[in-house]
Every structure is written in C-alpha cells, then in structure tokens.
Image 1 (cartoon, helix red, strand yellow):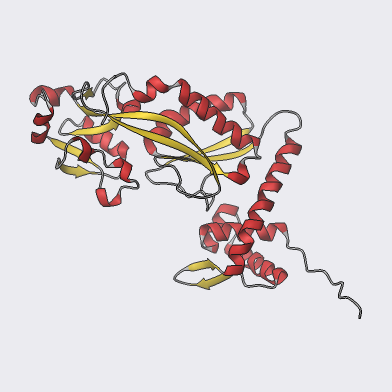
Image 2 (cartoon, rainbow, N blue to C red):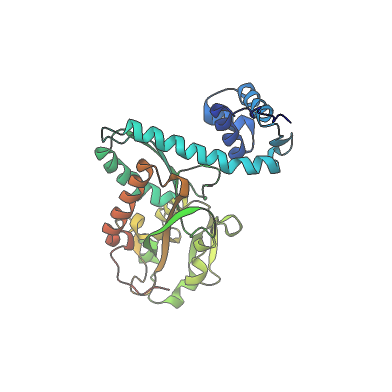
Length: 312
C-alpha cells in the first residue's frame, strides 16, 4: 500500500504574528492598531491561518470579540516560541557588530516610572542609543501574557507563569503634609492623627491590596478625598488641606511637603520585576533589566528616603 506523502501546509509567519496579536488583545481591531494595519487585513490573515492549520482558532462574537478555541490555545505556545526565536535570530544578526538595537516596553507604577525608571532609561540610552524604549507609568498592572509590555515592574511577585522574576528593591512611604497645614494643626503623637483628614486610594478600585496602607497607619481614617492615582494624591496633599502617604522617592525632596512623625511612621513595600521566559534570549531585554537592577541597588538611599524610621 502506497504511503500518503502529502505534507501539511506550512503556516505563514506573518499570519502567525497577526494570530498572536489577536490572541493577546482579544479583538481584531486592537491587533490592527498594534500592527499598524486595517481590520480587514487582520481578519484575512486569521482566516488564512485557520485554513492552513485546518482548524478553527477563534470563536467570534460581537459581545466577546475573538476567544481562543482549544486548538487556538494550543497554537499560542508554539507561535510564541517561534516569535522568540525570530526575535533572537534578528537580534543576533543585527547585533553582530556589538551595537544592540531593537525595542523594549516597560510597564510600571506611576510614581516609580516617572521618578526612577524614566531617568534611568535616559541614562541607559546614552550607552545603547539604538534601543528604543516605551515606559508605561500607569495606575494598574500591565499584562505580560498579552504582551502589553516586555518588562513589568509590580508591587507583588507574580503568583505563577513562565516568567523570570526578581525582587528589584524595597522602597519607603511616609506620611506627608505641607508646613502650613502642620503649623495650624500640629501632630505630636499618633493619637493626634485621629483628628485629621487624609487623601487615600479608592479602596474598591485599588489595583493591589498593597496600596491600602493608610488603614495600617491610621485605622478608620477620615478620607473625604480619594483617587486611584498617587500623582493626584500628591497634588492634593500640596493644597494643604489634608495629609497623604506618599513614596519618599517622590515626596522627600519636595520642600513644599514635610514628613509627619518621621521617627514613628513609615511603610516599606517592594517592587518586583518580571519578564517572559522566552525573552531571556533577547540581549536588549536582559540589558534593560540588568541596568534597572544595578541602578535600583545603587539607589537604595533614594528609594528609602532620608529617614531611618522604624517600619510597620
């Protein structure tokens, strides 16, 4: 009996790249924006890939967009491995002269992104001018599995997933108010805090329970003004009508603010840095990560502030 030697059709890499973007974003329109093409191109390439694979990769609906089928979920892992291999190969070929190039996107919290990551990436690009960098300082976590960023800096260590993860640093927060506010309403001990007003996070919208430190410092504190943004809380504290717990790396150097009970009140939190295992082969990603680790360790005094207060 003659064997069937017909080979299965090979998937087109451009189709796979589009497939990954749709899988990560959940919609063809989001994938189109990321790739810089139109919706019809995305839809056409997804159909072409499904025909080549002989399988339905997405369940489509107006309400839920593109949801991966079981076959689609299985393909994601293979497609991401191919993506990583293509990126590594491109980097190896283009970097044979020793000059790293390419693109890296970093997701991080607002204050840390603005006061630490941005300055450090400016310094990094003096050494590696051919690496372009996006910094996303946002008041929420970025999703590494959807490739919203290559590197994520978060308040909590990822619970699971194929990630390279390292503790980046400790940082200190303290209670701050304007000098005029404290002159009119002196604080001599913790008990005095019960009579004051505080700026706080919107508790049910806080993207991490690690942000709800006001309850640790002043249980039952009065918070008539709340915001999901630490930058908004910072600006509110500068108005001189209430106090706020702020990162020392943001507030300690501002002469318009004074630490309240600096010998008694402070909170220590951590930043964790993660990136996908398949990006470990990319020198541009590991170079950025290595620079941030090195600079965070060298900046310990800045990140912990000038106080030597005991912590909660």
